[in-house]
Length: 210
Image (cartoon, rainbow, N blue to C red):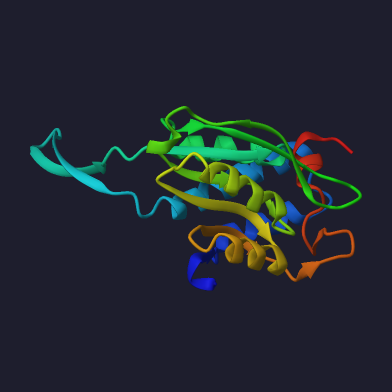
């Protein structure tokens, strides 16, 4: 399982995750931290992008240098909390397209229910990175990736801030071809399927709702 999982150990990410967890962190700072952590994770998730060599003229001379070889990306946040991660990814890859998948957790069954799906028309020619700050039970991410696979993208990765071991196992078991990038792997889920120690409800903290 773990060969398909990247858990960040960079000091800056660990520092920012600690600030993110604190109940004293307000919505404005919380949003900024989500964006910053997402940028750092996106840096890792795009490490395998292919390069091609071009000729460029510097003020000193003409030389050969490398640029990304035109591989097309799409970021797909799972609504609504995933929206908080979009700005961070687009900072690094401004030419990427953005799709949206709407899933909510039924309060009785705790199972995900789809209510919206809008993906780029050319997603079949793109590599997709699915965004959701919290990987708890794994239900929403598994369903979102299943939906995306119906459109035959080139590949799919999943990026989150906090993961629970239960959700990570469920996701990698359901989609063993999907590589997962997360900033922190926490202890467990509680009886209400919240991640412990976690950071609370990411959507509420991003948007200032209760």
